[in-house]
Amino acid sequence: MSGTSTVLIVLGLFLLGGVYSFVKQQMPRSLVVLLSIAAGMCLVAGVLRLEVWN
Image (cartoon, rainbow, N blue to C red; front, side, top):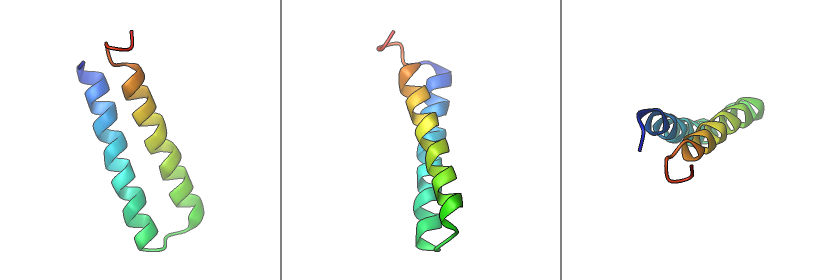
C-alpha cells in the first residue's frame, strides 16, 4: 500500500468513528451527513489509489 492511500483510508475510518460518536450524541443531522460524505470520499479515494486497483 502506498503512503497516501494508507493515510486516506485511516482518515476515512477516523471520520466514521466521528460519525458514530455524533449520532450517539444526537448532533444535528446535517453535520452527521456532511461527516459521512467526507468519510466515504476518503475511503473511496484511498481504495482507488491502492496499487492493486491500478
